[in-house]
Length: 268
Image (cartoon, rainbow, N blue to C red):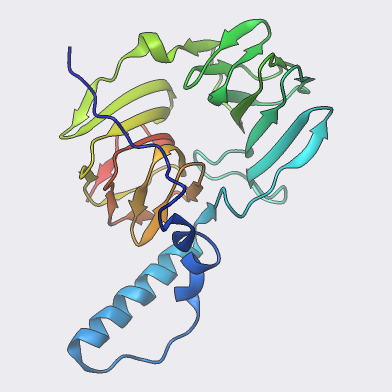
C-alpha cells in the first residue's frame, strides 16, 4: 500500500496573514508602468492576472464571516448565483459552509441537488453519521436534518440537475486512485460531463494549463495551492466560470481540495 505524504497543518507563527486580505489584493491597485523589457513583461503579466481574476469569485476564510442561521447554527456564504439569469454549465445555485455547535441541529428546506462534505467534526444527516471528508449527495426535493453532538463544519453545495440518486462516499473506504504524477483523485459523483472530486497532491505537484467546460469550484480542505498568481489557503474558495482557464495550478505544501467541474480536464 502506498503511503501518502503528510500535508502540514496551518501554522500560527508563519507569514500566512500577509497572503490573505487586505495584503493579498494590494497588487490590484493601479501601479505606474514599469520601464524596460523586464518591467514590460512584469506589467503584462500583472494585467493578465487582473483580467483573469475579474471573471472569478474568490472567498477568503479569514475575511468572510459566519451569520446566524438557527440556534447553534451559523452559515458562511461562498457563492450565490444571480436569480435574474440562467445558470452557466456546472454553476451552483449556492455554496456555503454550515457550522454547528455541539448539540445543535437544523432541518433544511426542500431544494435542488445537494452535496455535503464534512470539513471538521462529526455530523449526522438524516441519521447517517459522517466524519471528516465524508461525502453525501442527496437528490432534489429532500429536506435533510443535520445533527451534531460534538460540533461540525459542513460544506453544502446546491445545484440544478442532473438527477442523481443518494450517494455516500466515506473517506476511510474510498482510497486515492492515481490521477497524474504526484496527484491522486477521488471521484465523489459524476454526471453529464461534470463531477465532484477530492484531489490530494504531493508537495511540488502541478497541473498543466487547462480550460473549463463547466464552472470550476475549488474549496481548500487542507494545505495551500496557487491558482495562477493567487494563493489559496485552508478554507478558501474560488469559482472559475465556464470558458475560463488556469495557467498555473501548483502546490508547495501538498494539498487536499474539493473541486466541482469537468470530469475530464481540458488541457491546452
